Image (cartoon, rainbow, N blue to C red; front, side):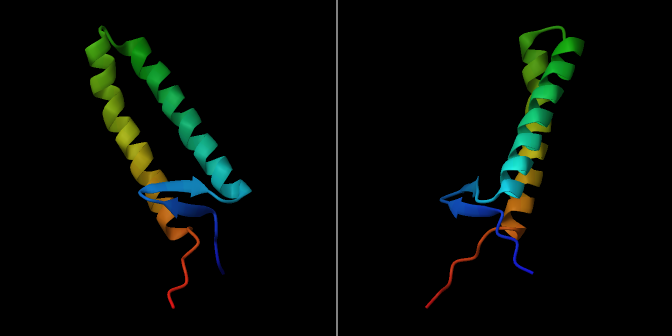
Length: 77
């Protein structure tokens, strides 16, 4: 079964189907939610950013792994 949810443009994975766009939307919503949650518990801007960067890297890593396994592979002649 071929899953063509993403296409690769350089190092960026762009959604190529509805499932890819849904996954991108979920990742973005999760990042915003985590930022608001961390910001509510933090005491300074640097505290917020230090705690948020790690979560953002994890979200990006999971997005990239899913995109890698569901991308449309190019045909090599």
